[in-house]
Length: 143
Image (cartoon, rainbow, N blue to C red; front, side, top):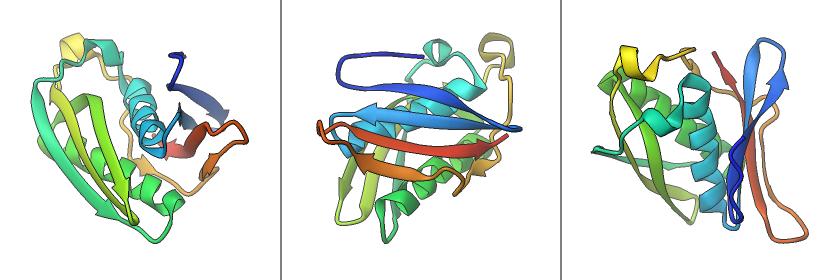
């Protein structure tokens, strides 16, 4: 688990797959932390250098579907560009997400990927703000 005052991520147990959660003071921070949790299921995020920029855009009718679309766009970028990402700058406005992810090509010997993420699912899908104003974004990823 990675705890910081304003935002953090965690994994949660789910049968054969992996649950991911991101927390933050804004929905954007929560989405960024959810992405970090997904990458952390693959490898040690601290070993991924933020060298190459990847712009990502998606839109959906609600925040839950937007989270799944966001994570699946990252899964697609990982598969097609053969990259891992470690930093995310997310902006959400009017059901549209514009983000920049920074990462580097996968280096098997250094990154030692543990699993291949097939995609984000609708299982345990939740995006909400608690009574203290902290955002949480979660779902289960298929590995």
